[in-house]
Each structure stands twice: as structure tokens, then as C-alpha cells.
Length: 458
Ligand SMILES: [Zn+2]
Image (cartoon, rainbow, N blue to C red; front, side):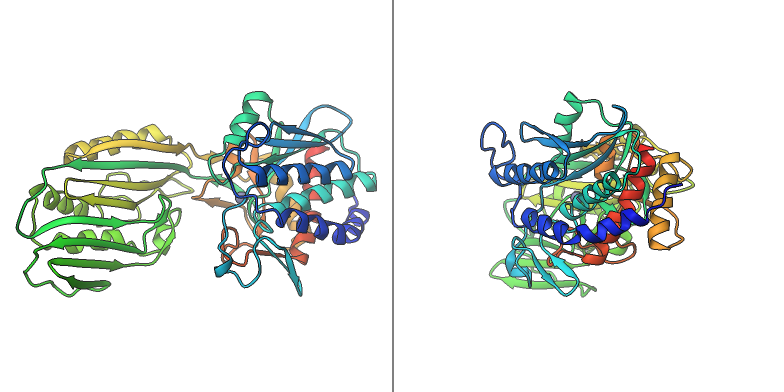
């Protein structure tokens, strides 16, 4: 097999350059903005980050192409045209400097930590892979296949970038996405978002529910929920996590829970379900709202696995979750969005049928929303073997690949797996305040990606 001693030494040598390039990219706030015409469908900052990334690739000796600002690619030529790929993205999620102790868009290095939006997700790891490949070329490691680095520009807000790429190009035969966590993700559950709703006639007088709101995003377990009743005079029971405030003829009822990503709802505490259960014990008008609350309370006794919706299921490797996440009641109706992550071996249609049926039985309307079928290559897939070997060699860790409920960029292309670089078992840094990657993590990522690329391109 290959001797990577020289490759690792070259990566050490490249570190100052890699840090310089990372700063260049981090200092561009490449959050999706308004389309700025041709070549900038996601705004000028995203366009600038793509141009800079491709300039860095050119400097490393790769040939590049800007695909009208939707995405771009850079090729490290191998002996043949057959491609293996590294798929990452240059767009970032917004950062509020008030929440950060370092500027999100002015990369700072403190001790071993490199701070800034995109250091971990996903500019840092893309540079690590690029410099890893550069070290392979420089060290004379033979690459039979061409290595294509693909830079998406709209991963965080819709993936229009990869739709564009897939329409115009044939994807590489296999590859990895450095946009998740170590060691390797071999299974990603299916995802469905869907909505239940109903309408009714408003009540003119008496104790009545006029408003309910919960949920910040369809993929987050709500930590807060609030309902407003008018002219409610009856006594209110005391309940855990529920607080009440009176304002004139308004009674505000607040439920408090614990937020969690909807791919792991059991880690959170669903404030919305708590509010449904509380309200179900009260009497109020209109009849439609009261009936809806009772049904929703019954449907969310199990607020993590969907038993009451009829979708609870398990296969050998995974378990389906089902979480009510966003809800709104007006005087005349409600909508409820749920997030579902379903078993690796299942397909979405099986669940659609059950959910439609549940809606019908309860007199609700049902509207399917976004969905992604599961991805499962399995730990014995040859690609998984090559990637795990590369990870184990550098980290010295003897661990098993993961199955997750979240969807990664790897779902975009067949035979792609999400591979690093967040440390396994630690709180996520992507999308958080004070996002960082350490110099050691960056260097190790480059070493691991170099090995993985060499093995894929062999
Ligand atoms: Zn990402």
C-alpha cells in the first residue's frame, strides 16, 4: 500500500498556506443573498466566495470551472477521465456577531482554534481535502482517476446548486462529502415534512381560544409554545412547565420545553405537545378549536416516535421518529407541521398512506411537504471500507461508522458518503456561535482526506 510519510510532511508544510486561504474564505460572509444577476444567483458574497475558492484551486494547479455561480468545480487530473469526487459547499448560515465572542466574518486564530463562520461547515474541510490532494500530487502518489472537487453555493438554503450540477453533469463514480462528523456516515434516514390542518367558525363570545403559536423551524423540537384565551374565567390547573399570565381579558398560557434537532427528538422536551395536553383539560370555544386540541393532544402522547399517528416503526438498524414542530392556531383554524425521520430500509410512500389515513380519521386536511428517501450504503460497501481505513489510520481510533437521522449533502449524488470532520460525540459546532476548527483538526482532516482520495482514485 501507499507510504504516506511524505504526504503528511507536505501537509505540515502547507499549514500556514491553508490557514491563510481559510481566512480569505471565512472573511467573505457568503450567506445567501438576493440574486445579483448572471453569475450570482445567490448574491454577490456567495459569488465572491466561489471566485476565491476557484482562484485558490488554480494556485494549487487544478483546472477550474465556474458553473454560472450556482456551483463550481476544480479537477486534479489523473491518468484517466474517470472521476471520484469531493463535494462540499461555500455558502454559510447567518451569524449574529452579538452571540459570538470572536467576529464571525473576520477569521481569528486564538491558540490552536481558528474561529469564524464556515471554519467547520464547510470551508475548512474543503480546504483540508484540497491540500490533502495537493500533497498526494506533490508526493508523486499515482492517481489513476481524476479527482473532482465540487463547490456548492446553496447547500444551506435549498440545494439549487446541486440540482443545477446534476442537470448538466454526470456525477463522479463515487466520493465523499466533508460536511458531517467523524468517523463516517453510512446511513441517513429518510426525511419527511408534512402539514395537518383544519378550519372552523370563530366564536363571538365566551371563553375562547384565539391564538396559539409554537416552533422556530420545521426541523427543531419546539422549546416554547404559547396560547391565548379570551374571557377565560375558570380556574387554571397547575402543571409542570406551564406558566400563566393575565392581561385584561387575555389569558396567556406558556409551555416551556427543551429544544433539540428533530432528528433526535428524544433529546428534547416538546413544549408544543405539553401545551396541547394542558389545553385539552380546559373548556373553551369554538367547538372546532376544542375538538382539534383534544385530537392533537391524543396524537402527541408519544411526541418523539409517532405511535399515535400510526407511524412508529423500527428496522434492524434504525427507528422512525415523528415530531410536531411548528404550529399556529387562529380564531378559525390551525396548521401543524411535523418532522419525520424514517427507517433506512423504508420508503416514503408507506408513511404517506398512514399519515393521510390518520388525518382523515381525525377530520384534518393533510399536505405532504419536502421529503428525502433514505441513504444506506452499509459498512461493508467498498467505499465505506476505504474511508474507514483512512480515518482509523490517522486517528488511531477503532470505531464503527454511524447511522444518523439528519440528511447530509451526500444524498445529492449516488455512491457518496458524508465523512468528517466534526469530532464524534461532541456538541456540534456547525451553525453555532463561535464556530471553530482547531489547527490539529484541520491538519488531521487533510491527512485523512489525502488517504481517502488516494484510495478512491487508485
Ligand atoms: Zn454544511
